[in-house]
Image 1 (cartoon, one colour):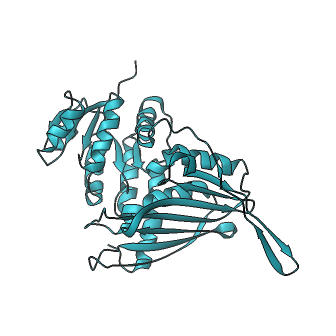
Image 2 (spheres, one colour; image 1 turned 120 degrees about the vertical axis):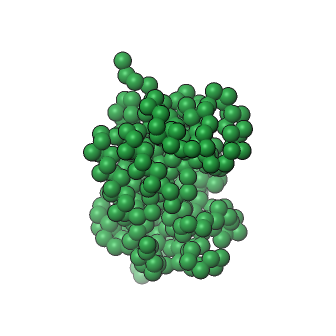
Image 3 (cartoon, one colour; image 1 turned 180 degrees about the vertical axis):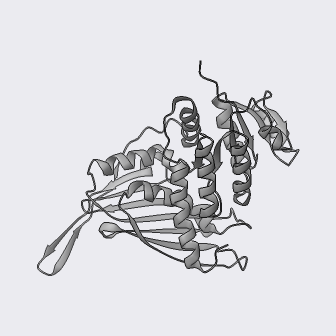
Length: 326
């Protein structure tokens, strides 16, 4: 008989509460830890059966807990993930895996050594719209990928520990690397610090892949409105995944036509055509279920530790281009 997954969750902040709600729905959440005692009441509103502790080591020392979910500030990801793996627990850690490629490799190596699973919270890989977008691209709807634009913009969610690059861009990097399978050849980046001298508030990262495929990622928490958009340009059409739009406009296909009459380019514009997808399940619930399925059924999810390292490689390379790396 297979052993049931019992989860302990560390970090009951804004996003942590979403994870608590979903893992509780899946019937696997046993205990939550947060240094803020007031969080206990919020957790018990979700389920009175969930235990609460202000000391995360109560989770690590509990032999009945088989997996740990970490939803704390990025600066603490390495320490908590390392300790959880040492205690023999599988780990789901929110993005980014940690704040350095070298440390990330240590975590992935430790997980392998101890035969444990380590999964990173790259949520967008589990979004039904992105999954459908990927299917359509694979089917040849837009032909060969030529260029990818990605915007993740809002006002707020400021961080003191890491740049907007590390806070916002992991989602977009993970999607782009998931779509483009050719080798990454070059990374460029620049940005600006306006609220705090050492923290970038806005960054633009440029990726160049083999076969002349290019992508750029624009992230900012100093933007007048929220915009989360991934645009994939192919030689036969374009797909737009706009997560901030309503369902019918969330995923659109454009088959604009460009032809030449002598030396003059003629553009025939088309209206966006809705691409339907199943959006009955919350992406976060799908992601949480994928973690359980990996542990219990050995169904490998897209955001395993090695995938987290590929994202870290881009983040760290971009950080160097920005002029300061720790």
